[in-house]
Length: 188
Image 1 (tube, rainbow, N blue to C red):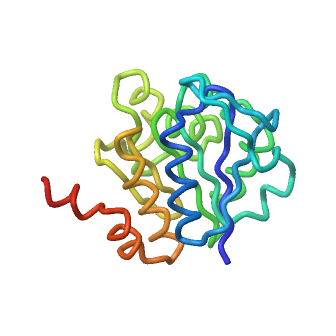
Image 2: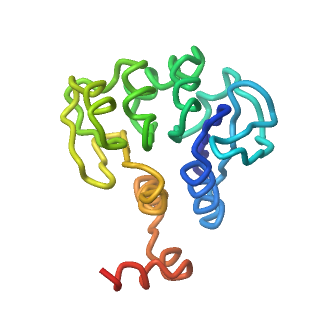
Image 3: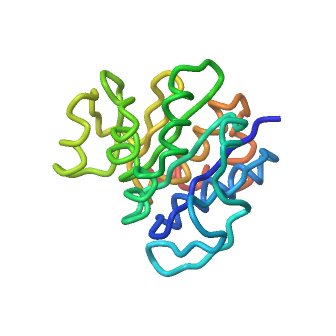
């Protein structure tokens, strides 16, 4: 069974983190909310949650690391040595995945130095796009480039979560139907 760590730091974007956790758990994927500091974490919009665990060297035991955006949460993630070292290791390994959304592609992936020449998307705007100047930046909603998945922000959280399932080898179609995603797609 695949194991996913959704990383949390004070100031994380709640929609991005909790949507991924919800979708993965609905799909029966082992998914832990991992705080980089305290077990109690407060999101960017003052929603307090209790993480499943705090960060440790066992982060390498996961198949995927997911970094939500939100400020200052993504900044704190980008400064955590264990997380950044693990992302660097995952970048060089087969069957290990890294996912980042919103501000996290610009802040966390560049901190790890793994963005160079990769197709990446992030929260729009000059600030984040400039941080990704060594990447092949795109404004697509969700991008998969090798073992890296990136996405734009809160409104793309469900698409991001479904793509994570697909990358893990779990067909997201049944879950999309059960969550009424087809109603949203049919509106467009």
